[in-house]
Structure formats: structure tokens, C-alpha cells
Length: 207
Image: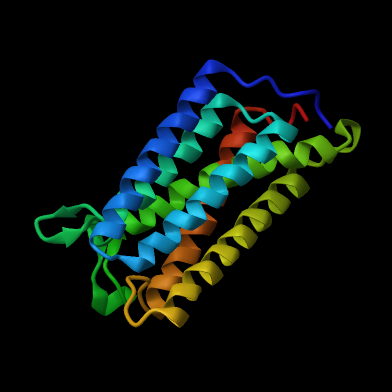
């Protein structure tokens, strides 16, 4: 276990920024009675606490904490901002595939948010995992595979959490089977990108 974590002023500002937008979006979703995203606001509040608690134990870099905060903002904005009548989560960024080919339109903001999220998540997992690894016995390939699988596991948990609103609310924006599978594909791609970055930057080698 690493030494005691020193909370910097920058990290405090990141926390305050995160709390501010969560409160703002929470009030907005309450006003428009969007109960699905109110559930996500509650989950995000828990994640703020959970990542903060992990940070006191594993001392995440400030950049990674900022990345996590940006993901939360992307998630909240995805369910509330509309562009030309299209919710941000459904906005097509690059028209790679049509619905007749892939069951949904690709490449959307939704997929971008999932890829980005699991880049951040997998890097967070790396900083947790490396505390328990003996540097003399590191196998970069094994660590890389393990990190991808860990990222995919968190992604699977995320899809289970998204299933909860479907069970308790009459209408949600979670999407259909194709959407769920594209989420899983995007999560996996994000984990792979993170591991490629960790290898190219030499962070895994330095464990």
C-alpha cells in the first residue's frame, strides 16, 4: 500500500467542479421529472464518494481524477442537451454504419462517452492493481490482458446498473439489445486503448 495521500488544491477544485455540475443537473432533472437520470445522479454521487475514498488509498494522479470528472459531465450532458432536436446521447458524430447494418446508428456520442469512460476506468484500475504487484515478477502481457478483462468487468456491472431503471420505470432511454451490445463493444475498446497507452507510456513496465 502506498503512503498517505496528499490532497492538492487542484484536486479540491476538481471535486468542487464535479459537485457543482452534479447539483446543477440534479436540479434540472428534478424540474423536468426525468427520474431515469435522477437515478444516475444518485449513482454519480456515490461514485464521487467511492473514487474519493479510493484516492485516499491509492493516490490517483490529478489528471486521472480530472478525466473521471469530465466523464461524469459527459454523462450528465448526454441526457439533457439537445442538438437540432436530437438528444446528445443519440447524436451521430461520424456516420460509419446505418441501422440496417448494425442495429443502430454508429458512431454516436453514446459510443464516444463509453469509450472515454473505460479509458479512464481502466487507468484507475491500473493504479489500484499496481499496488499489489511485485515489480520483479511483472509480465506485461499478462497485466495488459488482466486490465482489459477488469475494464470489461466494470463495463458489465455498468450495464446491469443501466438495467435497473428499465425494471422500475415505464420509459427509459437505455435503448435496446443492440444498444447494450454496442455499449459493451465500446467499453472493451476503451479498455484496450487504455492498456495500449499504459504500455506505450512505459507505466506498466515501471511497476
